[in-house]
Length: 351
Image (spheres, rainbow, N blue to C red):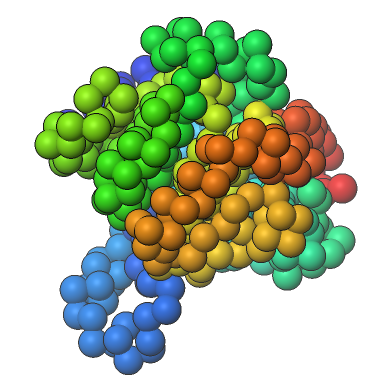
């Protein structure tokens, strides 16, 4: 099974010369959970203890791989899988670069921060408490297909997706894995929204694990026939966001960066429960600049209906939101980050 998994990863990431598997584990904690609740959550405690030993095992296997590969630099985008590799890199004297997309650094990068030679960040530097001399603002790299979308390009995307060119398209995106909460919220809002907006088409990226349940809800909805599409996942997400007249989404930093580059009007419902409250932090700048319509994490279907209706009826209002969000776009982020990595690889030190 391990060999089959590795072969699958290599096929998926064809741009990479080599893909290696290293054992790791995650530290589970939940935003807003009290210390007492954390102590009495026996299942989570046991999983954390188990994964501590997985990380320890991963450090040794990562060290073997790094000795074999002999990299000039190790780049950590965060996530628990980066921890054993980063620790092994430190022990071998290999320079480490971290990159944080969210306004709140993830735990993995906070662990590796003491050894990193430079911290690249995707949000304004004042959001981070890393040493100022090591901070570099690069922005957030996005899919190469993501570009500003003109009205002509939007019509092209609509044609490619078999959507009427004169339709109003609402895209609902709950994040990489989808969101059961967002799927449920829009399903309760959709009947009345479709009645009040006769040109409306709704596209929902539900997440593969939620697709069947979400689809079933619309099969029982007469108003949705021919006007609502539910997808589990699509590799052409940029086409759907490009075709959209309005987007309802969560507040993941990379997703927001994509919509900023496309200059799209967005309605954001941050997931307040996620670790560190990072999505709440991600929307602060949007609120300050009025670059998005930010709703409470527990918004009701009635409240959402009012906001969506107002924006769908107001093209100038949507354009103003999209233009404001576009001021935050960083189209050179990938290039800046690549140059930074090459600089550290060549010199062994940060900027």
